[in-house]
Amino acid sequence: MPEIRLQCLSAESAAAVVNEVTRPADTVHTASQDSHDVVIGYHDIRFPMDVAEWAFEHGHCHDEDAARVIGDVQGGGRG
Image (spheres, rainbow, N blue to C red):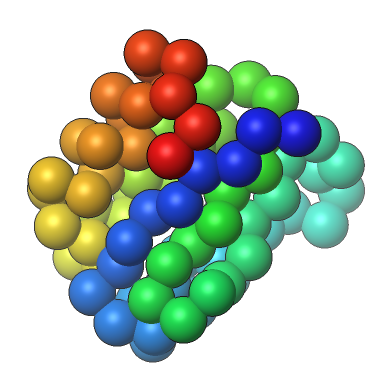
């Protein structure tokens, strides 16, 4: 499964993002915390894009960090 990291403003922000996006029934996508980062595992690129967008809209990451995730998954990068 490809993974990408979203850098958040703080460990608390990363925890809030993981808490919001984790769906126990979803066996295809994952989100876990590594200090200030959210490690996003995905098969569908829409998942990390949605996570990054949500995190930015709720003040948990900078726009540059959200944009990097979106750009990397669209371009095939593995952040």
